[in-house]
Length: 135
Image 1 (cartoon, rainbow, N blue to C red):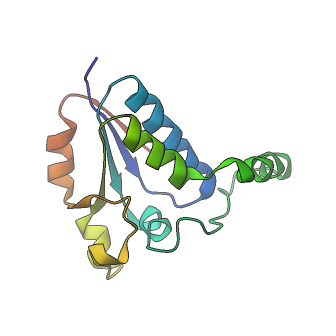
Image 2: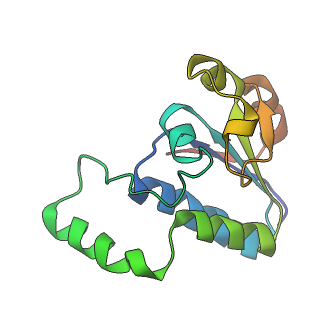
């Protein structure tokens, strides 16, 4: 069961970041390699010093679900979940080179969770025949 799970992480809201982190940790725990490509608003969340900040919730979150997410906040955030996923298995996090150019970012601007910068073509090649999820 070594088929790669690839995640395109576009959103930078805490609920979607946590969702991607949980999916990555689950796949890593099962021994599946994980490739994450950070685009646009996800990159904002991965800026150095920004991973612990409040990134809000997606527009579709109701008041009740917002309260449930807030209650869980003290139990670790998405960045901690991703760090644990990296300890569990092969989790590679890459920043999209086009998004980096548009946002005028350098790799040194990003948190150490980010392993490098790659283009979309490289992401597809590295994804191989595995599933690609878009969040």
